[in-house]
Image (cartoon, rainbow, N blue to C red; front, side, top):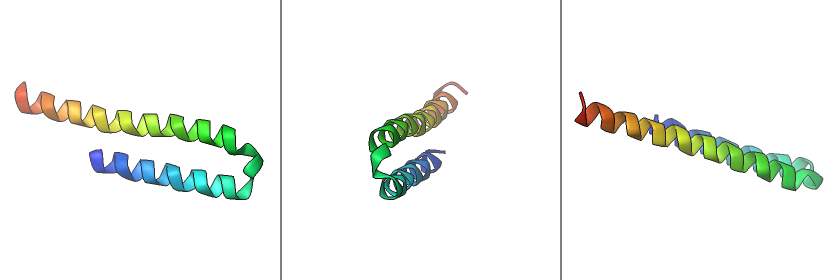
Length: 59
């Protein structure tokens, strides 16, 4: 799941670059969406890490 979080982040950055290349006037809006996407990707990775620690130390 942590690896999936990295792949999602890479895909989001690539989509940001493509979007800005296609329509530079939407740069600010696309950047805001990309930051939100990165936050969700990081949350996915942190959630997976939290679950791993819970399984390791609680179960």
